[in-house]
Image (cartoon, rainbow over all chains, first blue to last red):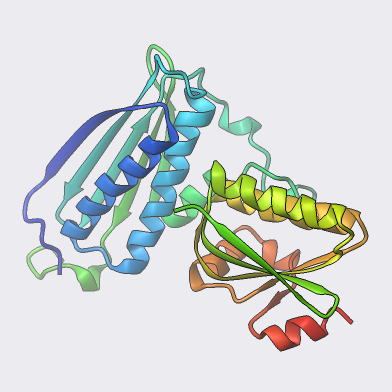
Length: 151
Length: 114
């Protein structure tokens, strides 16, 4: 049963370090539990959040100590929204090779976006002003897990 | 927790028992170094037991693929044993089930090398 009866938002500015990936995961999972997601969903959310944070820290901010990752965790009755914004140079999604194409299966990298999309109900990328990338991911609580007042 | 790797020899097959998380950073480099070390020592039949690995991220998947390629390029074989549901799902999503030979049972996996 979902425990969250009204919307709540947590915002944090995190350092461009791998420790921030763990911090973001903990914050998001705490909210996910309060919304009422089950263990399988939590695993999926955890995977997507870690991938987006690693992208922001490593590829976006390139571990730069002067750059931060802005994390917003929104908990709504029946819905989790996670936004991860970096201060990097941005990236062109169209240049990302299809990791499922036969010729790319043995490549070492390039699967992060695929996993984020696979594990969340929505995953969109946008350019951040004045610079950087914003990733917005949404996970919906399955109808059977929702209290009657929501479903 | 990152990954811990324990290596044991069963006949001519090297079994790596992995436990923990294979993720960007220490976990993935530990795995990479271990595979390179085995290949340098001419261990060409490698069975990677992932039954105690509870989490792999895309970097960890990259390391599995890289390990597979390193072993294959040396004329050897890297096979997987005991995937948790989470890791099975990852291999399905990334289509790597078509690349790796995967086993549930160690005896069957070991005999498949001969």
